[in-house]
View 1 (cartoon, rainbow, N blue to C red):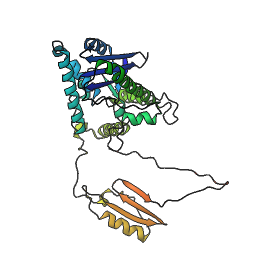
View 2: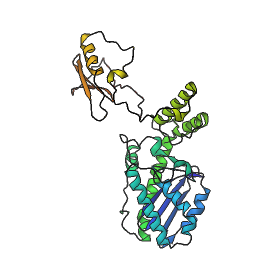
View 3: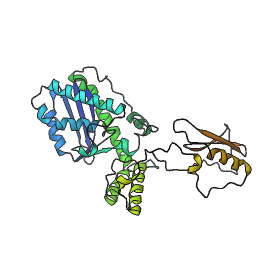
View 4: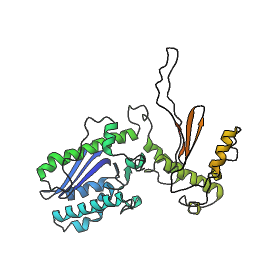
Length: 330
């Protein structure tokens, strides 16, 4: 059984809500002084063959693995002590994630396989960092909810049932809707029929590495490495690290041999650019004007610097907006 899930860790309560991906049956568990479902939670977790979440590799899955590892210890502890242990571990996970550290449990050590939509969509990239709340807005959820009570404030069982569980359930439903989009089960034309999960299953089977939580760029990078190893006979561990930086690099070292400019203006520009040493610690930009448009070249690419304008097509003209699609590397 696989389910979409979400957990909430507060100073005096732990809650778990799930939704079966096939039957849509919902589950919920509360660990509180006045209601301790931990044994039922353990029984439920034993039935699962997979869990789907949002940022669950760094948080929810870590907490679940901690609870599974602590089963023997929790058996003789008071419920308040259990909650305190879970809360302390959860805060540690958050601090580790915020500081860019490694999670306590590596993905391959987790007892229940995790599918992380946050990773698949590359929302762990600093430039694309996206919260579940923003996802709710983008997919037109009927409501967008915030945690009604701060995690450091003790709550009664009544507040858990009437406030925390509904919020927990709301996040599960939001994640479930995003899961369907990830599978291509949506009317959104851009994603309809595009099953990112099935694609990753096929890639994992064909190339022999676990790509289930890889973003598209990482998948391409891994396939390129495997192809390179096949051509050169090298093992992937022998490939030079991408973290190596040549501090004596000039921009002309990156110019392709076939590059050629005929006008004196561009020849001079390329000469100046090419003989400039790359400074990896500072921003470097080079501009050139051509036909009334200024173009700026930087380490990240080339961009035009345009003035604001209003374009109104006549009855005999069509106005079309177009862009160039690129595959960027990490």
